[in-house]
Length: 223
Figure 1 (cartoon, rainbow, N blue to C red):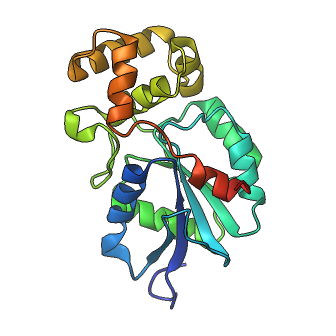
Figure 2 (figure 1 turned 30 degrees about the horizontal axis):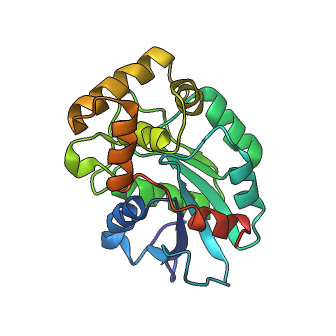
Figure 3 (figure 1 turned 180 degrees about the vertical axis):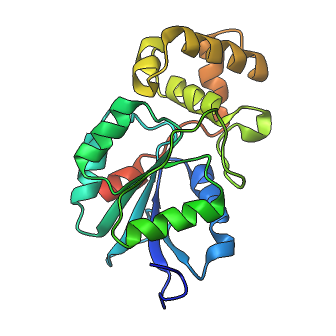
């Protein structure tokens, strides 16, 4: 359905445990307010009406735990559910589709392409992005640690470490090899001047890497 034939913008709720991630994503949609209406970014504000699309940003979320996606798909307030991620491991994509998601979109998409993909989902299509050839995020996104020089993938791994995950758990959750995880961790330590895992966790807590699960719980039917 083209934007020229739709009188009302698509109502989109953003779901992630990190305010800075959601703020960056909402900022991406600012230029497209005639096509995309971000109707929820604060889980503390009640939203009783349905939304057209729940956009689930996977930053530092355990993507292998498909219970969250399944619960979102079953939520009667969400007409469609779309995953927004950099991780295109075939098992992840297949599992998400089996859960009934309506889109699996890459964070490397430019804002205009992301909007077009959401419009296609709203029109009834299931949209799965082509797996990105290399790491990279769309302009306008933000994440914890970005202004300290951490890439989005480094930040996601640091967030998982801050949550208490071991290297093996991080590797499992991100579908990266243990050696790749170790390489990321060494790079993270160098950028934040950490000499140990404890120092890295303390730095993460002090710089916004502790998640607020209230928003996820809000959409999964929790308190």
